[in-house]
Image (cartoon, rainbow, N blue to C red; front, side, top):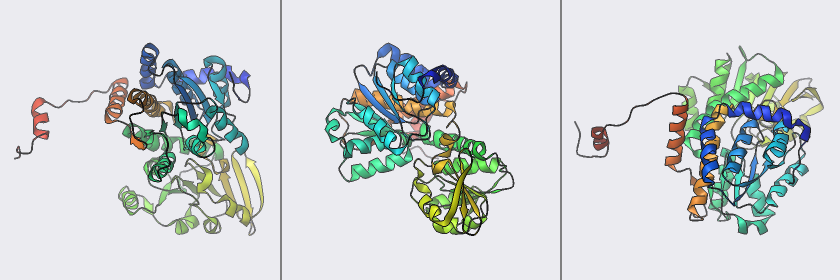
Amino acid sequence: MNYDVKDIKLAREGVLRIEWANQNMPVLNRIKARFKKEKPLKGKRLAACLHVTTETASLMQTLKAGGAQVFLCASNPLSTQDDVAASLVKNDKISTFAIKGENNKTYYKHIHAVIDQKPHYTMDDGADLVSTLHSERKEMLEFLEGGTEETTTGVIRLKSMAADKVLQYPIVAVNDAQTKHFFDNRYGTGQSTIDGIIRATNRLLAGSTFVVCGYGWCGRGLAMRARGMGAKVVVTEVDSLAALEAVMDGFTVMPIKKAAKEGDFFCTVTGNINVIRQEHFKVMKDGAIVANSGHFNVELDLKGLNALAKKKRMIREFVEEYLLQDGRRINILGDGRLINLAAAEGHPSSVMDMSFANQALSIEYMVKMKKALPLDVHPVPQRIDTAIANEKLAAMGTKIDRLTPEQKKYLSSWDLGT
C-alpha cells in the first residue's frame, strides 16, 4: 500500500481522535452500518481530495465499508491532521497522501498519486483534483464515472467547466444540499473560524470591530458568531440582496475601502480573488489582524502586502507580522489559508455528520445511476437531503408533525380557497 504521511507512529493518537469524532456522527454511522452489509460501492476505486481531519476519516471508513477502494490526499496544505493521516494508513489500510505544511510541489504530487490509481469516482473539496484530471491527466478520464464536490469555490469552478463544455464526467454538488450549506457553512464555518482566529491570536473579540467580507452562508455564520462574542460586526458585500439581508440582520454594511480603516479583525469568506488588496492594507490600523476562511488563499493580496512591507516575521505560530514602511504592523493568520483548519480543527463533527452523509449517499446515488447522468453539475436529490434531515432529527431526539390527508389534499389543489 502506497502512502505519504509525516510519521506513521502518530497513528495511536489519531485513532483516538477519530473515535471521539465518530461518537458525534450518528447519521454517517448509520450509513456506515448499512454500507457494511450491502456493499453498494463494491469494486469501485475512489480518489478523494479533502481536508484530512478526524471527520474525513469517518467518511473514508464509511466508503471503505461500502466496498470502495479509497485513496485520499489533502485539499489544502495546512489542513492535514498528521495523526489522523497516520491512523488511516496503519489502522484502516487506506492509502493516504497528506502532510501538514506540505509545499505546493508536494501538494500536487499527492494529487497525482491518487489519480495514478485510475479512480472511477472523485470526491473533491475545491476542484483541484478535477481540474488536474482535465488539464494534466486527461488519459485517466476514460475511467471516470462521476464525482462529488464539497465547497462553494469548487462548485463555481465546475459550473464554469460545464458551461464551457469541457467537463468530462458528471458531478454532484454536495455543497448545495440544504443539509450541507445551511448547517456546515453557517454553523460550522461560523464556530470553527472564530475558534481558529482565537487559537492563533489569543485576542479578545469583545469590544473590537470585526469585518466580515462576504455575506453568503459562511459569512452569515461568521458574523453571527463574532457578534455573539461581543464584537461590533461590519459586513462588506458586492451583492445588493446579500448586503440588504446583512442590514436587516442588524449589521453595519459598508465598502471594504471604508471598513479597512475601522477594523481590528478582518476575515474573508467570499470564494473570490483579492478581496482585501494593497490599497486596503495601506489604511489599516497598526496591529490589524487579517484572516481568510475561504477555500483558497487568493482572497488576500499577499503579494501586494509584501510590496508594502520592509520586514516580516513569525511572531507566534500561525501569525506572520508584516512591518510596513511607516511602522504599522499587519498580522496575517495561517498564511492566508482557511484559518479554521490552519490553526484549529475545522468544523465540529456533528455538523460534518450531515455534510459527509451527503457525500456518501451521493456517491452511492451515482453508482446506481450507472453513467446515466449527463455531463453537468447536478444537485443532490431532494430525497437524500430530506432523509439526512430526518435522520439528524431522530438522532437529536426531535420529533415533528406530519401532514394529515386533508392537508395534503389542500396543498395539492387549486380550487380549495377560503
